[in-house]
Length: 289
Image 1 (cartoon, rainbow, N blue to C red):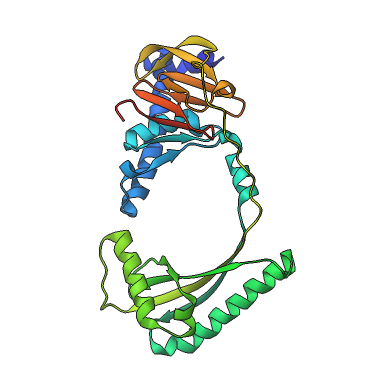
Image 2 (image 1 turned 60 degrees about the horizontal axis):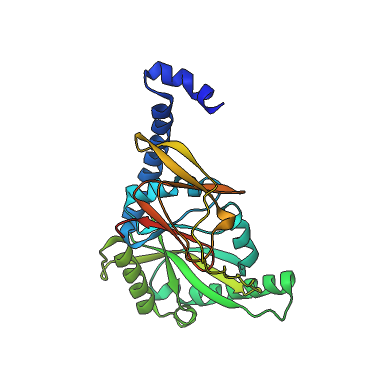
């Protein structure tokens, strides 16, 4: 069915079905690369310092190819990628965000407003937690603000201490913004006037967390379900197909390999290897790493 779907386009391009399909994959990777590299550049981050977390039904299928183009440390495929978001919702703390637009210059004239609005936000947050989840819930509060230099067309979110707001410590507020600006963009201007656009407060209350079981340690080689031929990187390869359910801690695989499970398929291209950690995560890196 897949070949039948690709054949008309392959005929029009006068190339093989395999080359046509791989071109589509390359276009998809190119689009993801463009978006991801732009975001990394914006925040001054080096992709070589990061692992790629592949989740969702398609993440593990494309993750190795994108991480390879970005030259990242490697790829982490959790045990159940297709429902990782659901697991995140299950283990996430109870939290809510509250915001108040102030749009004021960071000057002493803003002192009373800062203190009163910070207190009002805190009261709203605590009332929400009490009404929704009960009065005996432990909680934490984290203030931040959307701030910018006067004349800038965008704001950045700056974490703040509550005491800076209640005591109107404008020196600490200005320095916090300068540090965040320096970290994100590589420069700051301590002499420039600063505007505070939005005051934010996040209230969070911890929830019970499930215990993640460890896998048994492997004592035998990985059992291979079958071998198949696959077109990868412009050539045919004989590829092992392995079931995720048979993998144990310490198992190692070398690409090209396909790891199949109910909620996704992990594709590992040539030149990359897989190690299974004690929690069942697949750690995929370039062989030389």
